[in-house]
Amino acid sequence: KNRTLEGVMDAQLEEVRSYVQDEMKKLDGFKEDVLALQAWRCEASNEMTTAKMEQFEQALRETADTMKTLKEATSKIERLERALQDTSAKVDTFKEDIQEQLLPLRSEIENLKTSSEKQFSELSSNLEEDFQ
Image (cartoon, rainbow, N blue to C red; front, side, top):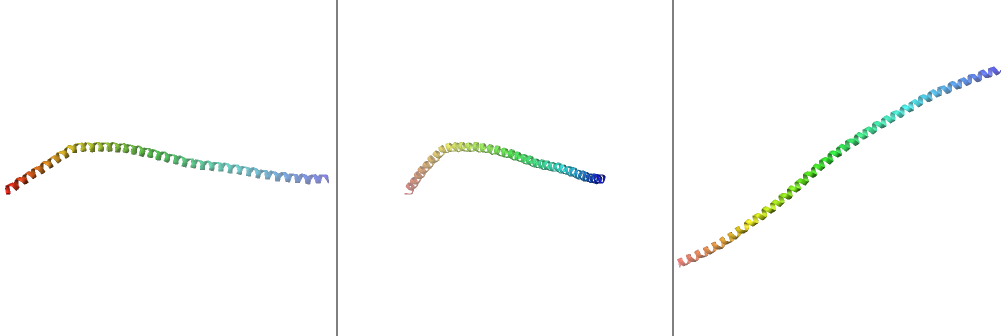
């Protein structure tokens, strides 16, 4: 009886061992799947990070280009402002020069006008005398 019981117990123990080994193999397979999934996830995350970094680098390049363009535009505006100030100063000087040259001309014109009026008046007087 003991041997039969031992045989049954051995058989059941062997069955349990076999079951445990099968489950351990399944767990090992599951563990490998989990590790593969983690590796894939990590790789996907790295790819996403790489893509985001590339987008960020592209945005930085575009920002640098924009800053360069703005700097060039600002430089051009400053040059134009200086040129405008120079031109404005030259125009003011030119106006002053013209004003200075016009003063004697105005005086001369006024003298000619007065002289002409005087001559006209004298001629008119002479003509009136001649008709009388």
